[in-house]
Length: 90
Image (cartoon, rainbow, N blue to C red; front, side):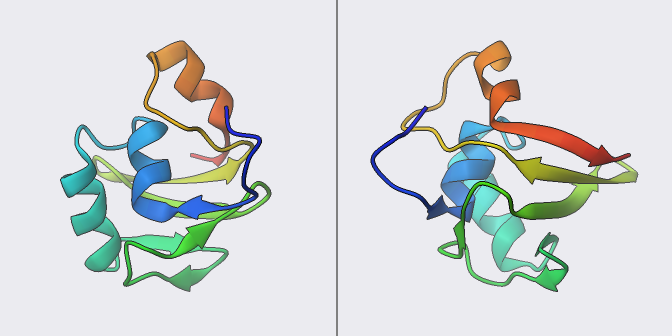
């Protein structure tokens, strides 16, 4: 997990937290407005997220809200990725 910065690009965080298989897919989701940050629609992949932010997005046919707990320097294994967030609402 990262200690060097207090924020990270949305597309990188979504990729590191394993919500999307590739960073390109994470960028496309962010640009298409499929992700909300603290209730506001996001349309830029470069939008910054920080611990404490709430992200709302589609997961299959459902909506999921997650609280950002930490940032990461790289994409790690799934157990490590789960430490980056907690599910707020299914």
